[in-house]
Length: 261
Image 1 (cartoon, one colour):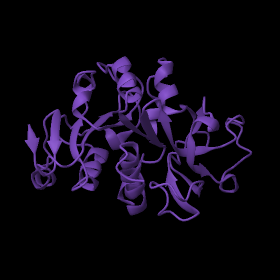
Image 2 (tube, one colour):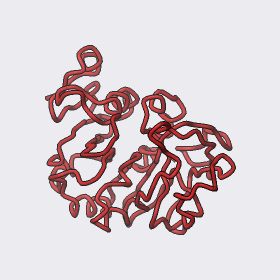
Image 3 (cartoon, one colour):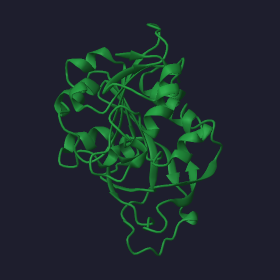
Image 4 (cartoon, helix red, strand yellow):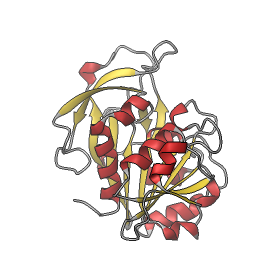
């Protein structure tokens, strides 16, 4: 079922698998797979199966004229055979979404596919090491989050001011979001784009991972013949409304597809 963007915004009603935007075969085809499972990521939780989540709506909006987007929360759309339709796959997932062909996904990226991960994607398939290896790290903890304060206001350092996903951001910026720390992060295997400014953090927090010396937030990397882009930001609607974040995400996906330099 194909739904044009004006109808989408008017009705917000979709089928489980929907192609969004104007029909333009010249645009690169992108699969946006969002599945919250049992996480607290309400930004990707649909109010009903037929109504897009916050992140799905915003991704469809910022993709207008850039991507030919298919949105799904059905893991059966991420298979070895179906991935051949797309130039890029964007995950906003958590825990263990069912029915995904994980081995097929890894092989697709190795053979030249473009993969982008948002926020809790780093907390996906923790028991499948190849996924974390491909992504570049695994979620470890969020030491600054409390029940009373689910958002943490931090300063973000721009480590690479020349990358397409970050060159518009200046040398630093402030944001309030759900802030992660990571494990299995190897700075020698990625291009670090954004990191936490430690001067903006409570470094006395006993829950911190002291081994996470780089405090990464976003990175890019080559993975065999493919490319991977990841950003830990995007857990709140306010972040998706931010023009700088929207550019950061779109340019990151385009970089992974080799559509921009």
